[in-house]
Length: 309
Image (cartoon, helix red, strand yellow):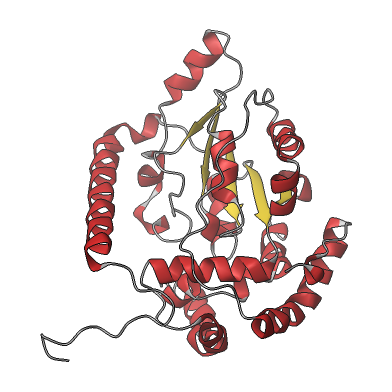
């Protein structure tokens, strides 16, 4: 391609170049500030808290909305950013790096001394649910943490992740093409991750549209190391239809006072593109049917996801 050629337009989304450049600059600026702040906290890492609760995922299933509710509670101290990615990407950087995300232990002691009640520490990285090494790493670091999972109709979750990756310019294909390409993209990636704990699989992170929706395959790895009572598994449907009841279930699980609020704005659903093609939805519905049946049996409740859309 010559310097005068225009880049090939994306088949479903073509943003204004000026706006995209502005967004990229803002993102880079945020990352630089975050890294600088974390670096400044490293000397005090031994005196910082570790999480009492972790939102594990699933990605694009309402974890940001869940966090937006919980961040209102004065009884939870959150990481510098919601997603630390420690148990997926930076585990080999060491525990001091992880602790740098969190408040000083003296903040908790002060809260207890002044009668503010319990102060928990939390983070939420939706990539944890899928990652093969995250369960054992988390078990070795914070074995008693309360683990929160929120799940969504896997067909809609897959399309939401697709839109997110398109917006981040990580996906050049149409949704149907991306679904068809997943098997080749992910071929051998899990084996490489298992053989080398430092290997970071871009395809499993960005292009696991189907794999991330096979929820019991992921939960099995966590349940092998943690007791069932350490988990709270919620549904995005319930959070949308009955937010007060669902959030009360969450605060009861965390053993903190109920939230007194009028709700939060729903998290952004990425970019707006054409709806999923009906034939693609039908194909994915059939693909996920046995996986959803396993989840229904585990949860002991019907999901009705096969009839949605």
